[in-house]
Image (cartoon, rainbow, N blue to C red; front, side, top):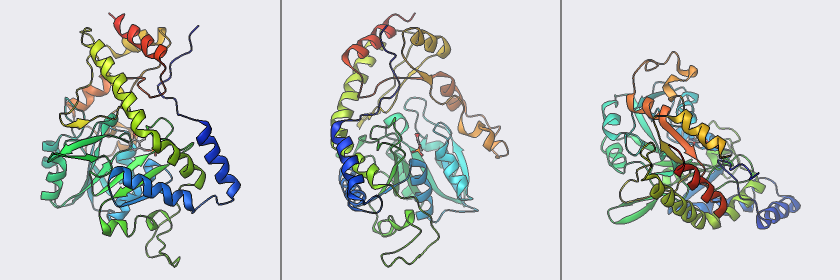
Length: 366
Ligand SMILES: Cc1ncc(COP(=O)(O)O)c(C=O)c1O
């Protein structure tokens, strides 16, 4: 029997194991050289000046909202097609998430729908690079025009980029503050929970480290309310080793995705994801759109391939938002996609044999 093909398989090599052991042996388990170096190397990778490792992608979102001073009475526009943390991070600050519709082709925030939902209370927009594909760069200009901060939820987009005015801009440099997750299934992981905040703005940069460290400055005086959202040194050491491989891993994901797309062309029951022009997808997820999601998932299951409906419930329909003013609103594109998007394995750890098995399963689905 061949082994089942998982949706994610974190990379764990001898160099990562050694980096973890060396860090433990050093006795410097928190607030040390690994975290500082990881911040510098990650900022450089994204092409920004400032970064701070933190405890998770959700922690990064919360920190970003606090960096922007968002709280009770404020509104923050978010997509309803995303992981729930995009919305609940806003609720955690006492502000209100205002849900907006996504594009029917690229599945990121619909810029026109965002514009319609701006009120005098709107302080920011959280754009998500869904499944590793960057949001429409028009969102950046639109937020600037309206004086809104743009929080970039890049939790799924390490290594993604977009071309703006002829220049390549990496995920992590496409918002006022940007947030990454190192959850084990992500394109870069750290051996546990972790996240990163990045920014190009000096006023944000001045507080980017203290926001995850009790709001303390260099003299250990707390300048603002904060808590401990730091990353451990061991995780930073592992993350540094992973970051070195990010470009080659994303390249492999792109080549797997491109072959999937080619094979999908001949299957009229399945639709491959559309790629935004002038952008480089990081393929955190490869989601096939199909009207018969359950039947397709069962078919893959019989071939020992993991797959799942990626977000079966739109965020505004989760029980946590039962009393939200938009709880009963119709978001037809989002709701349609929630029933139809099936994630299949596209990770860089897939072997040639596994890739062929996935091709075979797609080809035999009728
Ligand atoms: C779009 C998005 N935002 C935020 C998060 C939260 O990240 P974490 O699980 O590291 O808290 C995730 C994680 O899956 C995500 O996919």
